[in-house]
Image 1 (cartoon, rainbow, N blue to C red):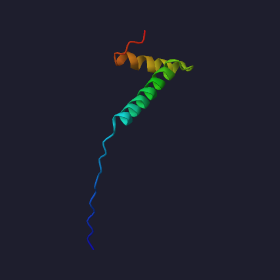
Image 2: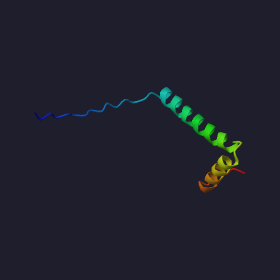
Image 3: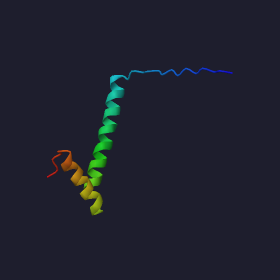
Length: 61
């Protein structure tokens, strides 16, 4: 028996308010990770984040 499966994908466009919420949550997560590692108590985590910021050209001091 030969079965053929067909995958369908549905796309859904987001409203402006949903895009704002998604963007705000992404920004909040990114800032939390950036600030959380920048003020981390463990020096290895802090130094790793600091070096990464310098490598990406992000001004940190």
